[in-house]
Amino acid sequence: MKTRLIILLLLGFLNDAYPQSLLKAADSIRRHYDIPELSYAVVRADSVFEMAALGRHSILLPDTATLNDRFHLGSNTKAMTAFVIAKYVEEGKLKWTTKFFDLFPEWKFQSERYYRNITLLDLLTHRAGIPPFQGDQDPVIPNFQGDNAHKRYLFAKFVLKQAPEKPSAQHPFVYSNAGYTLAALMVEKVTQMSWETLIKRVFNQDLNLNVGFSWPDNQTTKDTWGHRTNDGIMKPLGSHQMYHLDYTEPAGDINMTMPDYVRFIQLNLKGLSGSDAYLKASTYFFIHNCRPAYALGWFNIVEGDNIFSSHSGTGDFTYYSIAQIDRRKGLAYIVFANAYNEATLEGVRMLMRKMKESN
Image 1 (cartoon, rainbow, N blue to C red):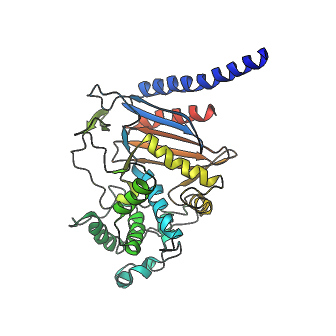
Image 2: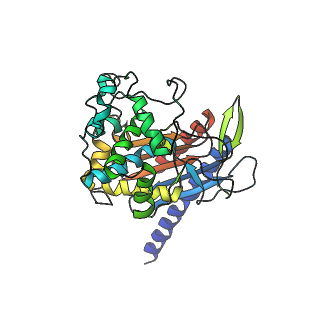
Image 3: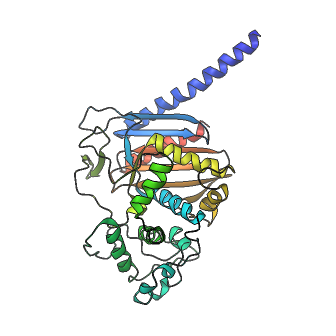
């Protein structure tokens, strides 16, 4: 009896020691790499192994971090857009093989010939040859007018007239933010609802997650400020400052708290373990495995004997997020930061390594 009690106490000590050890390491990394705020989590499908928030909302404010703080996800939005579309594929509104011009036949002969047979799956896995629309190399985009949905509609017509960037044997996909706008148009067409409405319906209403758009509001509430670094100087940016994604919101414009994002990742973990969880287990398998290298909103990364579903994102070089799902272990590792620069990236890489080494 005494031996059993000692073992139980030892196990309890070890379980408590791991989070404390990781917490100390995470804060040391945050301080060393000058990351204003850092939030991280290690989770299983049915439990949270560790979750914490460290630091301050802004380098110019005394506000301390909490788990209620919101972070801009950047391109980690893609997995959520693909998730919403998967729901309507399950309901029979679309098929993965549905061709874009089956829904928009009036555009077919006004668009580049290369795009004529592109499918929903091609768009979401970056196999459609759509130009990236990621920054300085983009063609000049007209100043479209109207609400977000109408501006995306006009932007899509513009995109389809641009020369394609074709995948190759060496580069099987061309990563494209604009491709996700085209995919969003397809689900908007069959549901007669905007991408924003669909996101709120699936995540906020059905799943009771509090999803927001664009940068977190830090003007009327105490919340995170993104930090941009120019010439080595880090500057906090308020949510009142001009920010837009040039009509590619479905590729990268969601913000969330860490606990709510954890619940989204846990749905994926449950599905990959073979359980239905809002979507069918077979749908999760398809989302993560339908194509090599890049599937539906997830990169497929091989590390030794492990395969990870992985993605990272930044909101205009102000926030950084990364999520990795270890399919073999059934674990996920998540880090959010409210800055983006080389030091931030190195710090997050260090923390991810520490999290993996501890499991």
